[in-house]
Image (tube, rainbow, N blue to C red; front, side, top):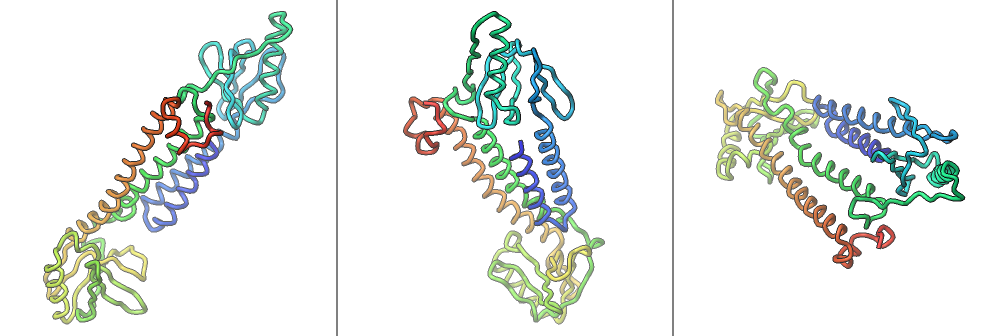
Length: 314
């Protein structure tokens, strides 16, 4: 849980950094910060009291306090940062490192032995059910897989979140500027650049998704022959590098709002498609991992290529 909370906070900061001028991005970053704060708070307030009572112990969480009878404990499972207590009614209680798993087990065994008039009593160690018990601390692997899935999924949808937040702007949301047509520059990727004053730049990008190469060449030639061209840029855009949403030449629209929006969506989909392919490959890997580890005796050599021996229960 602390790892998940830290990753949530890191994700929120990254989104805020790359989408600091976008309301939707800032909203998502605020959401991730709230979730990470809740996870961290729950983790910090969920523990078993170290002061054991005669016949019970107390599990405290952020919202409530539960009393567990020592006689109801039927077994335990060790984990790296504590373990899990299994109750006779089928429920499981997480025991963190605050209380000390070994001390807690010894206390419960001592109580159950005295209650049954026995010299000693040993609670059975119950193996993990995940991966048929072949992995030590399998929840660490599950958490890692879940975090990586969230990273791939976020990278797949982030282009639409960042690039397409204001893609459907209209003339009322823009301001118009005039630039000399002869100053227009055609870049290698098919974008049209208009140099501005004080180092500013007006850039109409992603035209290759709307026009073919011949049409782009005709477009730039038409712009060069015009004395001035009118450019529509978002009114709320930060100064310095402006995104051109419409180009008018001799009072005629030669690049429309709809065409620039289609270009932006095309570029966003291109980036997302690559990440979706990687996500698909990752999911295939996770499925193969689960199959191989669950059948460890059969695929031992393959599993040893991707998992260290100390993480395996041979």
